[in-house]
Structure formats: structure tokens, C-alpha cells
Length: 184
View 1: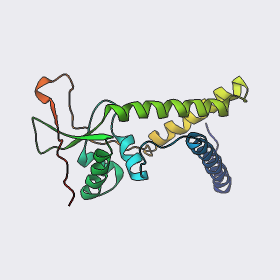
View 2 (view 1 turned 90 degrees about the vertical axis):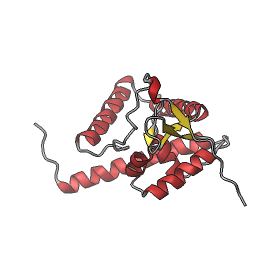
View 3 (view 1 turned 45 degrees about the vertical axis):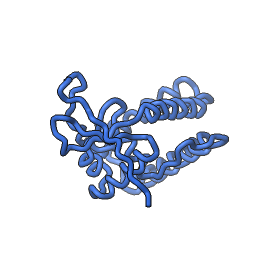
């Protein structure tokens, strides 16, 4: 049975966690970008959208808009920019041409894997000076925090429509839209 934490104590601990997480993020951002050229500059909205597109699959535009908490026109504008930058493809399933889905390009998938690996290396550098027991404790506590976000319906990204596609279903092949807008 867990003891109830006084609200002042909880607020102090929460502020300490926020400060610590910000310090870790600042370290990771600085270490990640130091000496590296960003190949494709992305806005915060574009990064959030990319995190919502499954590694191997699709997300419906309506689901993307809902998960981002934006209107359909705003989600469409974000999708347009991702397509223009060569990071995502807009696709329509043959079974329902009204449905618009987003998927990652192979290049975007490779960048995502590389970015994940760089984050693993950075966290490894942070954990390296700690004792083995402290490392395990950090991993355990972080897992508990992540689980608490799910338990309390705080998870990000929120569940979104994926278009309910079965990749083995030959009748649901995707047709990617390749229309390019003409500039005046």
C-alpha cells in the first residue's frame, strides 16, 4: 500500500522531475545537433506528425489530425510539407479512394532508425558513470513513469486511425498520389 504524498511534496518532486527531464533533453538536443547538419529541417508540427506515422504502415489523415489536435486543413498543410520534403507519401487504398493515408518513405524510415540509435547512444553516455544497480533503477523508474502515462490515459501519441489495412491483402494495394503542385 502506497502512502499518500502531501500536495506540496508532490509539487516539489514534480518540479524536480521537470527540471531533470529538461536538462536531459537539452543535453540530448545539444549533443545530437553538435557538428551535424540537419539534412531536412523540420518544424515541431512535422516532427510530431512523423512520430504518429507507423514505421511500417499508414495513418489516416483524420486520425493524424485528431492525434495532433488540429483541424483537417492544418493536418493537410503539414502533410503537404512532409510530402514536399520527401519524408512521407500520401496514399489512397483501392478499396476506398476517399480515404487518404500517410506513410513514411524508406529514407524517412532510415532516418528514424538512425535517430533512435543516436538517442540510445546518448542515453548510454548519461548512464555510463552510474553503477550497474543505479542504471537498472533508472530504467525501472522510467518504465514505471511510462506505464503511469498509459494507466492514467496520458500516453502520447494518442491512439489514432491507421486505416485498418492488412498488408497481406492483395486487394488493398496502395496507390500513392504523385501529383506535384505547380508554382506560379
